[in-house]
Length: 193
Image 1 (spheres, rainbow, N blue to C red):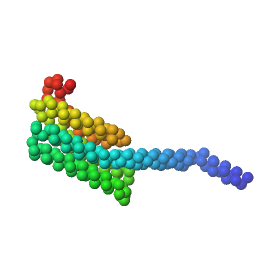
Image 2: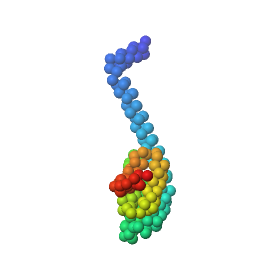
Image 3: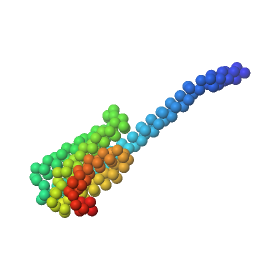
Image 4: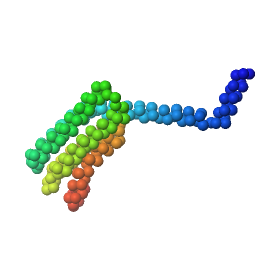
């Protein structure tokens, strides 16, 4: 009977003041949600950084191909300057990748994701600079090639950055907006076909 009266006393206290019980459940749900977010960020980071070496290789190949093909319609200084910018962005991404692989950092998965997004924005800006600087207003063939390369780079980015929508948009907007701007300001129906 002593146990029963103790249980009744606890029950009656909980009935009179249900807040601690509900607060405890809400706290557990909050902890569970935080754990899920942490696990999600960890998996996103693992997948994004896992695909980075291949992305870096393709960026080197495509940027070299772009400059080689566009060489007749762009200046040496412009081509060299853009390749240097691309090199800096890719080396920065490589350094971040090596830092991530060492795993001796105190950064959380969410912080690694933010760092990754910053490197993606930088890459998108450099590709967008190519769209802005290399656009030959008088030559439709080179315009089409430039658009083809940027569309290919962007579609590859969408695929490789699929685990994190913000990263995908952070690349695509700065990479493609200058091209869209040029086509929109060129006039006529050809740019929109």
